[in-house]
Length: 444
Image 1 (tube, rainbow, N blue to C red):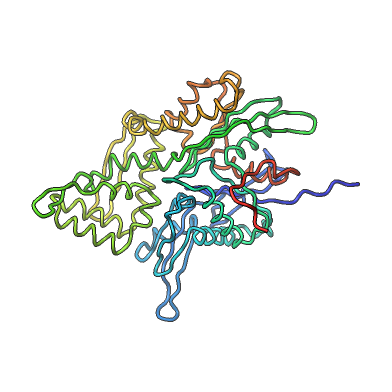
Image 2 (cartoon, rainbow, N blue to C red):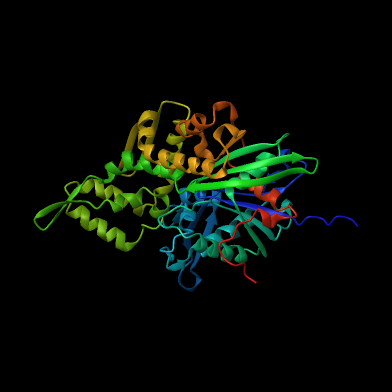
């Protein structure tokens, strides 16, 4: 009796910053490849996790237009007035307190945002890819970002969005496990691997033992740990230290006969990409205008209002991220941001940056220690460390693993693609349920 053909599956790594979708392809190294998104003379393999909404038409013909990924960024850059640009919205996935956000008079829940995003991803897929599989293997973090995250809430929202996108079989796999599965395809002997996956909102760690035999690679997950800190958190430190002080962070305002500090929550929210996306409301602007009118430095707070009203989150994000990335290879980098009355020029030093993220590094290191301790494997028994995700390039992050495991055992590769590749490969496994995790009962 012939062996049944495995069901095709789509591996989806929906990330805080970037999204990658992948299919199994035996003709490519590693056995998988990302979906292609043609864009003129460019073909994207990584799709930015961003949405841009804008109104079109008038009266009864008025509608809300939307774009996603590189197309959303392009529209926002070319036509910022009237645009509602959202990025890092994944960080709301597990937040019970996030009910919805208002976009040009229409309420969008998290699942609505994700379903809208997925629909635009599908619109931009190369037609040559053909019909996409209805089986979805989606990555999920070990620990969700945000305050008091609820994984069951996130899963319920994901289920709704993926079903709306047309997937009729949905599985979830921890992201570092997927990265480990892809990495293991290149192993030639048994190995115990520590995988560190650094995303935009979370850092996840998994220890997996792989047995390499005649039937291929078999895996046995040993432990997992995670923390809601990653690339966006590092960006926050730069904004908090360099940008926010120029926007009134240390200003004071007069209330009756007292001088009070401007509430810190304005700058905590402003420096978080996901919160910045929902700050543009009439109520927020009115409150900030009142503070500016009573402040000892009204000009600084007026710049904060300008930042919010003009939807400057994306250009600021780009400038901060580029400066942060530069610090991975040089000791000093320039941060330059200019728009209207806002002029920010600063020299960032790697030593300062590392001091700003020192508390974050401690929490990341503690999560790594938790993963290793729970595995029952001594650090000296870990054969390989696989680092994936953009934050793995940060020298201070890499040093955490060098100190624990040693430089010779650290490997990197396909930092933005490995999770999606692993998800697609897991989707072809006969015992796919062995790899999956679920917080809520599967819908009938």
